[in-house]
Length: 381
Image 1 (tube, rainbow, N blue to C red):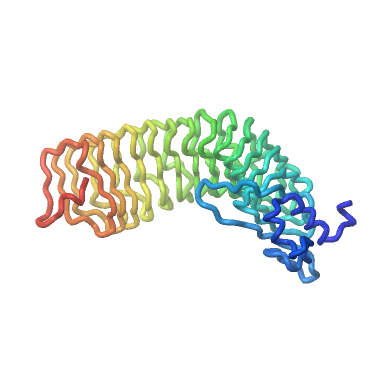
Image 2: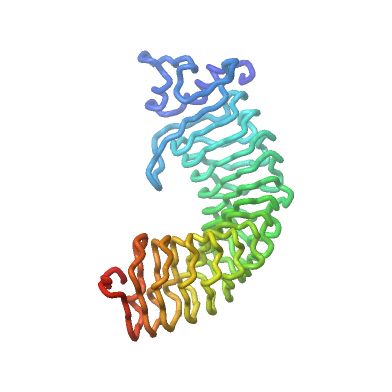
């Protein structure tokens, strides 16, 4: 009977089906459980109740531990407020209605959890819930979330079905990418308080009205989908700092001079954008601009790039004419302009010391290349 069990007994149940190696951390030399006050990475309240559980690990990119056994989340004491068990590879299920009633933050990234996830059963105390990189499945109910939840991450699972939101939800950070949701993405119905929204590599498709994004949005990540529409820079949220839209089907022209001044990262590679671009009035704090593999054309001027710019990728378009590289900002590390149709004069000066890779010569048709005395032309490829 859960209600009659001591915190010691409850915690022993939590770990009772872990692998022998993992259980050994909680036992003495004779195989008896230590008092929980001696368990690693448990934190207690003043009265001795378990408050936080921090059983995390570090693994390499893409690694998921195996053979770690099962963790029984439903036995955690109700006094627990934070559960951290990232990159552990634990098996088990997540029964939201049986999680601790005082739970505020749950971090279950990169385990082997299976089954469905009834988000509407989370308690009204939960503020952060992250269960990404597992094997969870079924549909998700985003309309009936508790009013307390602010951050929700369920990306990289096996969730499916249509998406339905509640505009009045207090969510600020929502990540749903790398699942198999179906249907379109109606951004006008997203929670209006969102600051960050990530829906990369889903099976969603259809028209996306970027002019209807939540007004305070700062970070948009919708790369690797089948979305289409136009990119009206002047109608993006005034607070937006990053927009990741690579590998979609957005089309039309793009007026970079009308990007919000807050923009730091704009990635629109591998779309069907076209027309000419102006690089002389970019946002003052822009660090990353990727417009590669589109259908842009015309001449480009690189004399007034912002001093913040670190990465500039314009390769595999149809830019033509002359190109002057004598006034690049010292901040630049990568400049890729290869695989265009330049046919005029290339003027290059001393390569900025920060530049690690500058690709401009190969696969273009330069009529003339002018460079400073003593310049090592091998610095440019």
